Image (cartoon, rainbow, N blue to C red; front, side, top):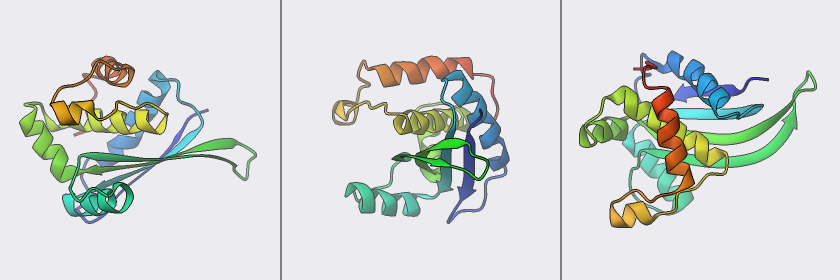
Length: 158
């Protein structure tokens, strides 16, 4: 069984590459053995993600990616059971800033943010130590993230 990825944008001009996100997410979720999930992905600007961050995390600042895990199961009209994994919101503004800051291309940063959000929806967490200390902790989630990204190095979205 495949997964469902509902991809949209809000508050920004729809990115030209938005149609390439769903096929990438199908490949990514297959590589991670995530199956039978429905995930909504929203591309937005800093204002929208700042509002989401404030409303749901009580943090009054823009960020690059937010994940909202759902975890409920439902059965569709064909009798197929799906997991409503949740929602991912990505600020295209911050994606561009991150790419410049980390000296990588926007395509690589987009793949990192999509994978990061998907891992959170599947129960992975990295804690907040890297935010306070400015370094990435040695943790399972971030190791899996970087190892998986290597497998998709040649994959083009943007």
